[in-house]
Amino acid sequence: MPDRGDWYQPDPLWYVIHSQGSYNMGNNDQDVPYSQISGSKTVTVSAFYMDETEITNNEYRQFVYWVRDSIAHRKLGESIEDQ
Image (cartoon, rainbow, N blue to C red; front, side):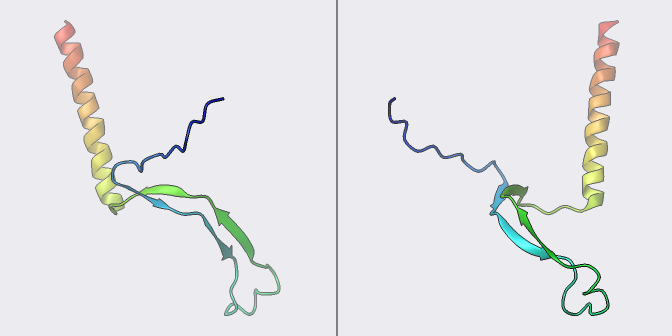
């Protein structure tokens, strides 16, 4: 087989890679009454991409409404032109 060399996937535009890692999920040392009832466990998270720009739920809702309205406008426009 021929040597293919290394392959590198470029980061998607406007996204940032977050590397994999692990953390302890559950009660901490300050939660004394419940520390004996349920223990903590280690959770591992795979690497993932996330948009580099933070938005609020309201901004996302406005975007969804805009997309929905633009799709409806295009669909209605196509049906009117077809007649």
